Every structure is written in C-alpha cells, then in structure tokens.
Image 1: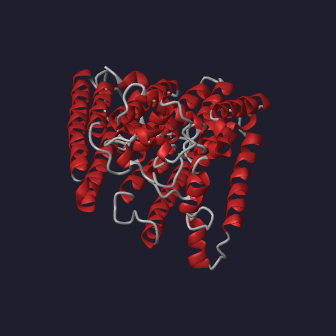
Image 2: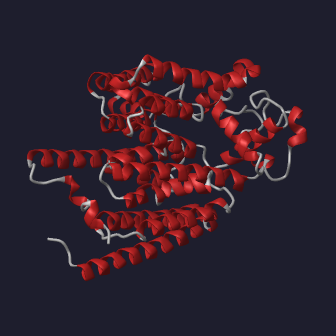
Image 3: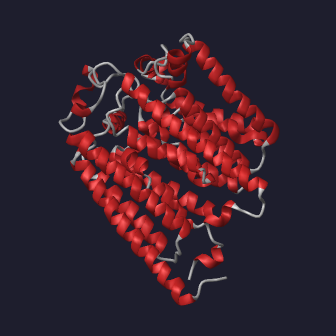
Length: 456
C-alpha cells in the first residue's frame, strides 16, 4: 500500500534534513583531517572512522528513505564542498601530485619527461621553492607515469603549475565519473541518489581531492567504459579501457572482461591507442618505461615481499617464497576467470560483474601498499552494487590511516585483518544470494522502492 501524500512529504523532508546534517558533519571531519595530520593516528584516523560512519548513514538513508528532486543536489553539493577542503589544503598523505606538476613543467619546457631525473642539472632552471622540494625520489628516479598521464600533466599545468590546480583537475575527472554513473543507475531501475556511494566515499575524498592521485582519471575512464557497455557500444568501452591503461598500466587487464564480446578489432584498436601514446615519447628509447623496474624492486615485486597471499602461505603453511612461480600462478587464476567469461558471458551486466571480479582478484593477489590503488574498484562496485567491494574500500581508508600502514610486520597484520573482513563480507553476500535464489518470493530489490513511488 502506498504511503499517504502528507506522510510521504514528511518522510522525504526527514531524509533530506538527515542527509544535510550528516553531510555538514562529513565536511567538518574533512576539515579536521587536514589540520590534524600532525596527529596522524589519534586525529586523522579518528576523523576517517567518523566519516565512514556518516557514509554508512547516508547510504542507508538513500536505500531506505523517501527522496525527492532536492535529495540528489544535496548529496552532490556536500560532495563538492568536502572536496574543496582537500583541494585547497596542502597534500600530506602523499607527495605524488608534485611529481605530476613537475612532469608538466618539464614538458612545457620542450623536454621529454622520461630523459632526466628531477635533480639532474639539465633541469636546474625549472627548480622552484614550491614544487621541486616536495618531489619524492627526485635524486634517483625517472618518472614512472605512462604517456597518457604525461599528456594530462602537460595540459593541466598549462592552466596553472600548482598542486591545487592539479588536484582540482582530478576532482573534475571524478565529476565525470559521477555523470557517467548517473546515466547508468536509472537505466537499471535504481535511484540516482545511489551516486552517494561514490561521491561520499572517504577513500575518494582523501586520495583524489586531498592527495590528487591520478587514479581519479582511471575512475572516470572506467565509468565511461561502463556507460558504453550499458549502451552496448562494446568497441567504445574497449577504447576507454585502453586510454585508462595509458594513464596507469593496471586497468588494461579489464579489457579481458569483455568476454565473448572481445574481438580482434577491439584488441587492435586498444593496442594502437597504447602504442600511439608511447610513440609520442619515443625519443627517450627504453627510458620511456621510466622508473618501472626500480619501482618493482623498491616495492618488493621481485622478491615477493609485496604479495600478501604468498607471505601468508609462507608464514603459516611454509610454502617456499618463490615470486616468479606465484606471479605465474596468479596469472593463471585470472586467466581461468577470463576464460570463463570468454565462453559464457556477453551481456553488459555480466561483463561489469566479471570486470569487478578481475579488479578485486588482481588487487588481492598483488596486494598494493598504498590506498589509492583500490580506487579502481569503486566505480565498478557502485555500478554493480556489490557491497563486499564497498566494504573493502571503506576498510582500506581506515587501515591505511592507522598505525598498521607501515611496510613490514604491521602491514602484514593489517592485510590479515582487512582481507579477512572482506572475505567474510563475500561469504555473507553469497549466503544472501543463495537464500534469494532458493526463495523467489523474496527479492534483493526490496532495498529500493520502485522509481515511480520514490519521488513526489
């Protein structure tokens, strides 16, 4: 039975007021976080926990509350206001954004960014007091970022050679992701207000608005790829994924999620996009790969220290720590899932589900040491409404704000906690799915009322 109109309006106002109150507190904790960074554990991490609580509260209001035409503007307005805090505050969780600006400055001077380390005397004339002192690894590391990222850095720095401009550009790409997902949600009979799951994500807030990480572009491009998939423009989706791979290499694996829709033409176009990017900077020769080899050594990719599943098996099961064998086995596991997709999957929802599975499995098997590497999970998790993946992104935000976020024994323990909770969430979700399958009278769609009844 439909709720009477006066009560319906009252409940809608209550939802909007509650969202507004939660949003104001969310912004406050953003502000607290950027000024409390010197008290990293006792200040910043506590603010992150409170933000996670407000994120969950907002999500419940969106799923179960009554909404109207004002609800979405409130959600997006709060999200933009929170990001303004991060954009105009000094970067403190990471200094990568300064390398972005530096690479843009180098290119603007007509120099291939892959040729020299920042401390090289050839680039002495570009040094300043704002960007150069903050660059990490400037004494020994060439840039690691792929050609697509370099073109982006050049373009953004033509507006302003500042960290705030670079962070604002990354938030701009995040807004593109919001737009793409807002197109998808109603096509699948879901409320547009579910964009809160991305717009209020603490992980996105801190790693994009505050730190300005390039992964924001990957989030945008994967969202555009998902929109192309939903519209059954499969070649377009493959091209968006290829462009994402020119920003950061790892999203390229999602091209394999195209399943039975993958064609030779798609592969050729994708390879052409990547090759064209590298051709622009070919004057650096093999140096176009930048700090990739050095990064692999630094992050323990060659010794196996990076891989949590391998470290866990070595500690508890006494499995030999052979990284080459582990990487091979991991590739075969991913290939098995991809093979299943190539045989069985062809519908957009199936492809997006497979893409999320590949992203989650790749992340778990290769165990990033930095929270921004979990960002590519977010748009796929929101689009598919896969709650365990959202739980993982929330966990990531907290754990990397805690005393466990230090490579070594502390991070090993953190990964034990983080992935155990995630796997428990996966198991619970699976049990619910089995229940709904065994009891057709129940439906997971009870979470969201019909669109026609959700608005005044």
